[in-house]
Structures are given as C-alpha cells and as structure tokens.
Length: 392
Image (cartoon, rainbow, N blue to C red; front, side, top):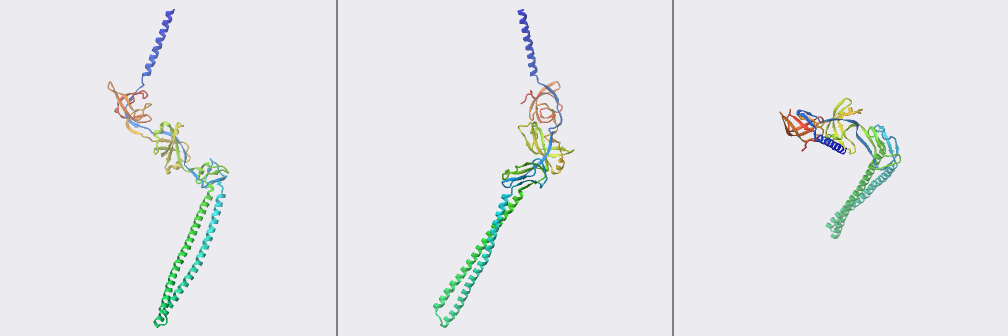
C-alpha cells in the first residue's frame, strides 16, 4: 500500500513537469507571417470628426477702472452688432470733463486778456518810440543851424560839439528803445502761443474723455454669442480688463479631434480635406492642443474666405488629415508594432532556400508599410510578430 502511494505521487509529478515543459515551449514560439512584397500606395492620411466654432473671440477692453451700473445681456445670449450689453458709471468722467472745460474757459479768458495787453503795450511803445524819433529830428535840425552860425561866427565850437554829443546819445537811445520794444512784443507773442497750446491740449483731453464717456455704454462690436460679462451691478472692473467677450460669427473655424496616436501626423500648416453640408474643400491646420489629461488631441482647422459660407449651419464635419502618403512604393501588409525606420530580420524564400535578410521600414500607413531596402518586388518573406522580432 505504501509503495502504491509513492508511485502515484511520482506519476503525478511527471505529468505536471510535462505540462510545464509544453507550456514553456509554446511561449517561446513566435507568430510567423508570410507576406509577398508588392508595389502600391501607402496611405497615412486618416479621417476624424470636427465641429464648427467661431474663429475669433472679440473683447471690449475697459478704458479705466469703473463700476458696473446696469447689465442688459447675459452670457450665452445672442447679440447684434451695436446692441447695448452693459453700462458703466459715468460720474467720474463727467466730473473730469466739467473740470477740463472750466480750465479751458480760464485759459481762453487769459488769452483774450493777453491779446488786449499786447495792443495796449504796442500803442504805448509806438508812442514812446515816435517821441524819441521827433527829439532826434529836432536835434539834427538844431545842429544844422548851429553849424551855419559857427561859419558866420555867431556861436562857439564847444556849443556845436555839445549838440553833436547829445544827438549821438539820442540816436543810441532811439535804437535801444526800438530793440527793447521788439523783444517785449516777442515775449507777449510767446505768452499767447503758450496759452493757445494749453487750450489745445485741454480740448484734446476733453475729446479723449468724451470718447471714454461713450464707451461706458458697452455695445457689441460684432454680432455673435456673448461669452463673458466682466461683472454684476456694483462690481468694479479693473483698467484694461475685458468688459465683454463675444464669439464673432463673421468668421468660423473647425475644431478637429483625433486619438493621441495621431499626434505626430497633425502638424501646424498641414492640409485637411473638409466635408460639410455635402461640400468638400481644403483647410489648413492651425494650433494643436495636446492635453495631458485627455485621451485625444484637438486642433484648429482654418478655411479660405471663399469657403467660410459653406461652414454656416454645419454641425457634423468630416476631416481627412493629409499626411505623408506614398504612391507606387515597395510595401508589405502592416503588422502591429511596426515603426518608422525600424530594422527587421526576415526570411526571404529563394527557391527551396530561406535566406535571413534585414529590411528597413519607411512610411507606416494604415494598412501597409513602406520598405526602404532589403527585398525586391515579388519576394516572399516570412516575418515574425514585431513584438518578438529581432530589432536592431
């Protein structure tokens, strides 16, 4: 009885060992595919879906820190160009305009007073200069008379010399007075120009403030869907903050979506065939968005102005992303795991002989892989599953 038990255990162990050996042998075997090298296209382009969106988001920027007093439209509502969306407080700007107008009035009064002073001073200066001219003329006449008397012996040389000296001083005084008068008038003219420039500057400031005052009535710059409003009634909006954001309906773009495995094929500037509303036309890839937390990648597709109208009303858009398609190249059917520029050891059947050869893959398409080198058209090859093939 004891011997029978030992024989039973030994037999069971032998069977278990055989099963393990058979399983190990099967795990070592690679899947072998037999393929014929031929010529044909290798298509990399792929289809995906897209949706039509507004190409531009238009913002209205706040020209100064201000508070919201009225909100007429809410996010999500459609607005027409020129339609009132919200209103800001006008009090601060109106006070500044009133203050500027007061300063303009004061400067204009000062300018008018300066002009009257110029006329008055010019009259006084002219009268003084004319009096000095008359004095010089009288002294010249007196000198002529004294010189005649000197020739007749009726006066002295000292008297004539004294008159000459006085005449020279009077002429110098007249010249100095004329120069002083010119300088004084130039100064008054400069004061007038400065006042005129100040008035012009204040008027420009008033025009700027009035333009800002108009902007307190925030209106839609374009027709579209209102995406964002800066705040509620009573909220302050910071300087240069967007008061409203609107999706501009005048131009549209397409948002495409594809799996992460297509990311390398989606390049900015690449061509896309767009099919929407039974119309097919070409578009161009813009920005590509690769979100780490998403299993898909999205990208912008822009179309020519001539095709903008074709996007109107389109919901489901079919996209064909054009990639590096090849025509009439050596190829074999694609196997899972094949990669660009990957080297494979394959067995090429020559008559009754199998010859180990290395092939280099090129473009990896949807159904076929391009062969760069290693075999010829018509060759029959046996290739291992890429997950277990020898890769260099």
